[in-house]
Image (cartoon, rainbow, N blue to C red):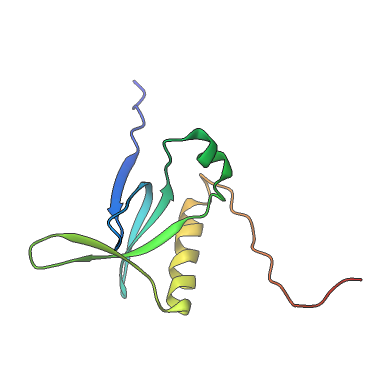
Length: 108
């Protein structure tokens, strides 16, 4: 019998009190911490079509009461390292586009 897919849905309240809903694609733990890869979910189909489809990668932290908090990764090198780990793990399920780096030169 085939298992039914049921996505892990995460609701996040930002510092302004606005709720954002994501699908949790993956989570990892490294020597530096715990991290989660999220994909935004929208109620409106048009917003889904307009979304760039970028992964949201956040650091996971818990306080003494067991409350879970998600934070942006401030260190650029750490963000790149964790992002690469998620990309490798999720590459079988998703296609990742390479970001073009702007050199500031024109090709005229």
